[in-house]
Amino acid sequence: MISSRRYWLPLPTRTVALAIQTLILGFATQRERAPDKVTEDVMAAAPEALAAGATAPR
Image (cartoon, rainbow, N blue to C red):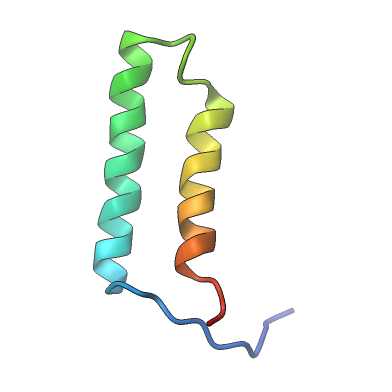
């Protein structure tokens, strides 16, 4: 079902996309160095939280 709600991004769409990409690349780099600290759950939760915050109804 498609929602009719309008969402507002506090930043331009490209900036949000670059932030998510940077977050993922940073986690990937950190995971190589400390795999026990950067779990798959952490890597999945952070971009989801960023996206949820970026698209929250205002």
